Image (cartoon, rainbow, N blue to C red; front, top):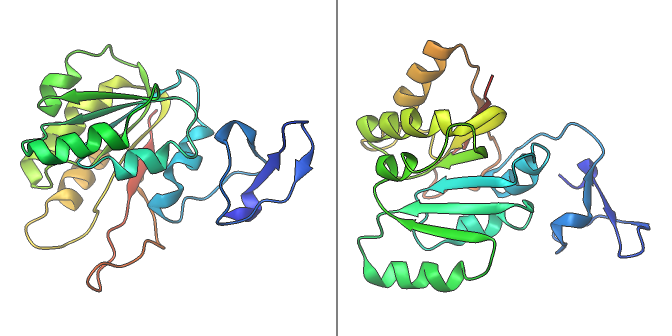
Length: 201
């Protein structure tokens, strides 16, 4: 990932980029067409599609990934989750405190109805992973992403009763998309859980 970016300091002077460095995302400029090899790079990846300045994560839980996205994405992030566990919601409120984040404690489809079509630069779907619910989330949030934006999600894997692969593949085939996948995500219990994505036409 490091070779795909150039960092500029406060005086607009070029400086080295370090893989594990901590940077203000406003100082990062693309120097090549980047690959997204792991979901940890998602914020940096979608920042090259910055236009509206807003993205949405569907399925936020503790807020850890939304916070990670914000390291590379300079816009606002809407975080949608039912948060049935009050303790987890309280953690998310702390983790996502600050002007970048807007928390919506609501069913994802009902939340989508509150936003205009084409208003987001990207959506990342990581809520209920059963086929029917992944399908409804994609169908609900796809119209909310502008043309040229990114539609993405987590856990493209044949694991337990997850239906992500089926839901994503069916939608992509119906709308003529080729699905991109991350390939270097750290395994959990010996299994990789890739991020899937495509650029909306």
